[in-house]
Each structure stands twice: as structure tokens, then as C-alpha cells.
Length: 236
Image (cartoon, rainbow, N blue to C red; front, side, top):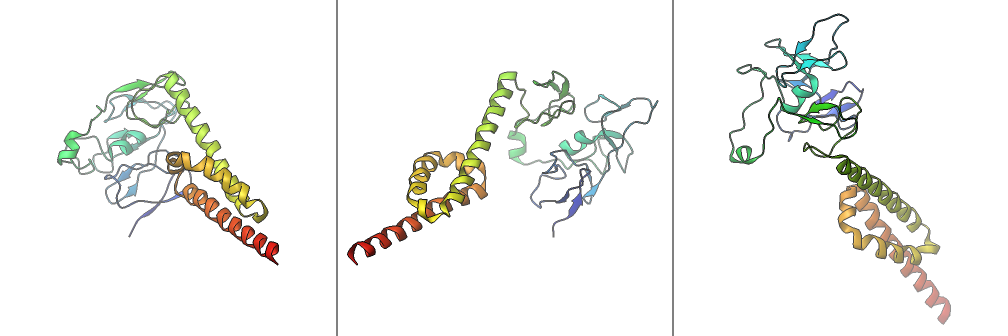
């Protein structure tokens, strides 16, 4: 039975059973959730006023007052909340809260990133952890952990806008397909617009695939009904 936890953004999240260890991000706010053994959520803390800087045991950089951190419930060492969630546990060697080591062949074949590596956010030019999928300074989200240039980021944003527009068109076609009198026109537009963009339709998500397919099927049925009605009237 899946465990339901509450993210700090307030969202109730069901932990998928097939996730990788304790590595998990909230699907709503995209922020990493620090999970201890037994799927216990570690709540983020902030440095108190005047409190000396603390070194994260994973990325080996100082935790700033703006960054959330968690303390390991076993060894009590401090970590960035994002660092803990990225690797799925404590960064102290031998700690029972440390992530389990995957010794499978696929794990050795996968490229790994050093915990202490950093990269530059292409949007705000601040230094962030190389494993970050979201800039902690400006909030920009990335689809890959690979370093991106400004042109890469602009291309990503352009693709996101195009996909958003495509989704709106699919919704419009689905709604229009329910209006029987314009079914032949909707069928023609759906066939010419959606069929050549099947890959984008899959990329849009399962609900849009259903709406796109439904738009074509429903408009086809209405078109056949109109054709049958017209033939009946013609021969009557």
C-alpha cells in the first residue's frame, strides 16, 4: 500500500512504489522532499539569525540563510534539503540513513555526477548544484541536469510554449467535436492537424491523447449521422 505524505507546499502526495529509493520530488511544486528510512518526511529548517554557517555533508558547500536544510535523524549531520532528496539519504558514509548502493550493471553504466560539482544557471547566472533541476535563486526549472546555455533555455521555453498552444488546440477540437452541425469541418481539421503530430500528441500527455482521439471519433460519428440524415431526406 502506497504511503501518502504532505509536502511543505501543502500538497498531499502519494509516494509511488516504483521510485528510486528515497529520491523523490513533489509533483506539484517540483521541490525535492527529504525522506528518511521508513518514508518519514524530514522538515526543512532555516538558519537562525546570527547562526554560524553549516557545511552540507553532500555538496560540501555552506548552507546559506535562504536555503532549507535537514539534520540526519541518525548521525545528526546537516544537509541541504535538495541534496538529501537528490541522492535519497544521508551523505555520511556508513550511516544507516545513507542511500543503498545499487550494484547492478545498469547502475555502473549510468553516468554519475559528483556531489560537489556545480553549474551556472543560464537565467540568473548564479552557481547551483550540478544535480539541480530547479535554480534555488530564480526558480527556473530545467528538463535535464546537463549544463544549459541561454540559447538552450530559450529553446526549452519556446518548446514549452508551443506544447501549451498545442494542448489548447486539442481541447478546442474536442469541445468543437461535440457540436454536431460542424462535425465534418472538425473532422477535417482534426485529421489534417493531429495525425501529422502524433508524436507531439503523445508528448502532451495521456489526457490530451484521449481528447485528440475522441475529437476525431466523435466528429466522425456525427459526420456519418449527418450524411445518413441527408440521404434519408434526399430519397424521402
